[in-house]
Length: 122
Image (tube, rainbow, N blue to C red):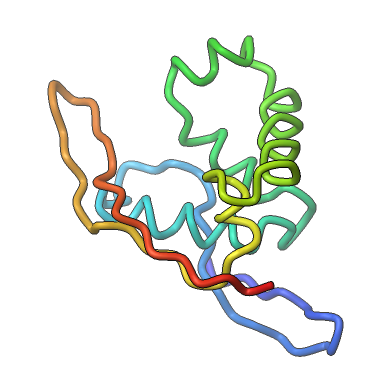
């Protein structure tokens, strides 16, 4: 899906959001899609990026937040606001996001090789 985001200057910026999990989405594309969704968190609606993160969340994350997406969004937002160098703070407030590019798998579970580089966009 190609989405647009309106800036205060009314510039339209095209981007591809993460959306929801689907079978034909290659695992190696998920990290960059989710980082883009977080960088543009409030497009096309408030907290759309965090909702995408929740859609891809593991059972462990869902258990920690007692399957409550609202609690997850509040926690991630508070973390970003109070700790700008945290994962969510960096994803929301920095303009250049990257990762090591590796997606590893073990027994059907995957994780991302994070070697992120951030440039402060503030």
